Length: 192
Image (cartoon, rainbow, N blue to C red; front, side):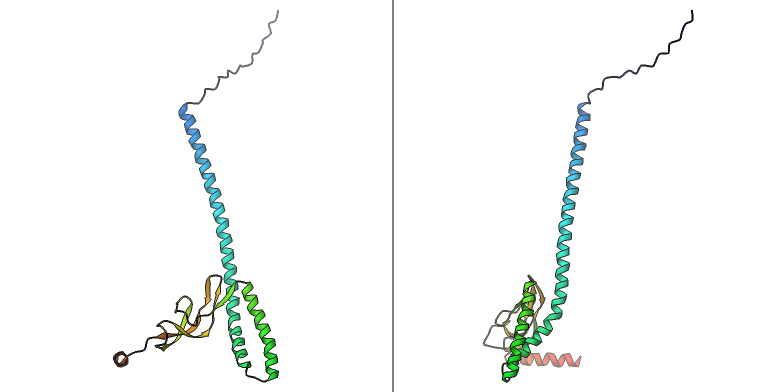
């Protein structure tokens, strides 16, 4: 009789998985918590970046509008000055002036629609953020620092001043002693 050899397949012994220790569980939980915190921080950073880009885009557009507006303000000033003199002209010029007033009104309306507003300064207190002092005038009638004349209106884009008003500012009158002191200071300055 021939004995057949039977090949035995190796048997894998599977050991039952041991339950992780309390320390291992704690490590896994801490790691999961850490990953969650990192994920939430990344989401917050992404949202902050979106907000910052949106804000920068708005600011960029605002500055672009500002540059165009600044270029338009000088011709608008000239329009206003010319129309102020047209009131004393004959009927034909007055008729033309009425048409130009309508055009000027439309230009101002377009600026207003884009958030550009003019502000008047006459009678208010000088503020270097809103005004550019072109002249000073001695006056006892108004308080020192009061604006007595406005050469050009100031303009704002939203809350930001884009062109300061050009103004004349009142100063207190000098008495004889102050005038003599000013002359001495000027003479000393010239000698140096």
